[in-house]
Image 1 (cartoon, rainbow, N blue to C red):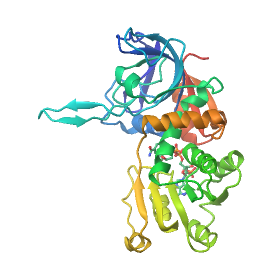
Image 2: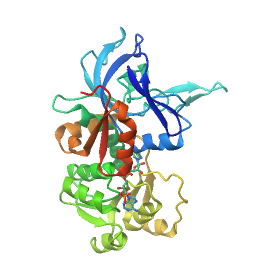
Image 3: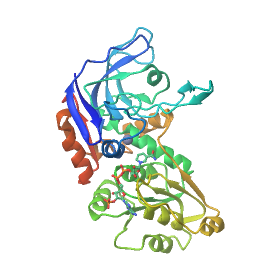
Image 4: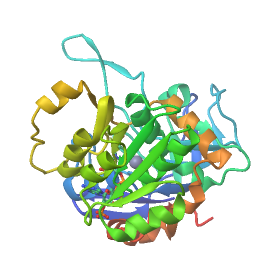
Length: 345
Ligand SMILES: NC(=O)c1ccc[n+]([C@@H]2O[C@H](COP(=O)([O-])OP(=O)(O)OC[C@H]3O[C@@H](n4cnc5c(N)ncnc54)[C@H](OP(=O)(O)O)[C@@H]3O)[C@@H](O)[C@H]2O)c1
Ligand SMILES: [Zn+2]
């Protein structure tokens, strides 16, 4: 089969390798779609201590199960599934003999979806995130269950629910998904705050009934406060990896509201803020990273219901041998999601 091997920093190469042979408790996935994620680009440019070269990355995956080991019952040949990143419940005994939780994720500790076939290991089959795709859901939209699941996790930690107001800072694919979920969950009011105009207009075309604010043209905190009678919003999610978005979030959240610092800050100065703001507001500042298999299942349901319109996020498709072009397109921010089609179907 062909696979895109990450051989080092900024060094990815498509070459032939053996199709993985599943053991009794494993299965084989024929990859249909693997979406490019910002973290694939971070790994590409900066490396990651959890990723050892050469490896196959890509963790937003969907495909068809084409072979199962004799002991596998959870999936069968012909099943259409989506596969995500983080596998919980994996424990290891360290050198001191102590049992500890270990990070274990698709495209990190084990091979991911930028290949024609991907091994579904025993832990993935036992714990997930692996979810069957309903017939009406395309493979391409199914691959987006992974980023959507992360968004759902962030919203859960921000205690978001029906009747609450929300501001989403940063309208890339994650932010737009959060706008759609906010409506699906019955938000009382939704603010969408975005820096570049291109992405702001892209979001506007995707989701109605949002008060859009152009971060470069308006004072976003003053605008949100003015439009909420000075009260601020119940929840703020920073789906942007910038310090400013984190500062703005804490300034615009309501008394006893929740902020979720969803976007990580890489290579940027630390967040400095007058902690009296948090003290007097009695607000809750949370973070979130990754998700659990139950969020992946919930994400597939939301995609299948059409409440999150998965197919509309996919602006470009590339064959595996053009993975560098796919990465470049992702980085151009000309669209929302880009998908690799390793088998061309
Ligand atoms: N917690 C998790 O589990 C998890 C999972 C996936 C992703 N993430 C993180 O979540 C963030 C969103 O993901 P994504 O794929 O949607 O990223 P993305 O494509 O980089 O989009 C981020 C958007 O935020 C905008 N932005 C940046 N600073 C802003 C500010 N101060 N005010 C308003 N808008 C601002 C950017 O605008 P421009 O167009 O002007 O650059 C961009 O459109 C990223 O930081 C990513 O690393 C976290
Ligand atoms: Zn991802």
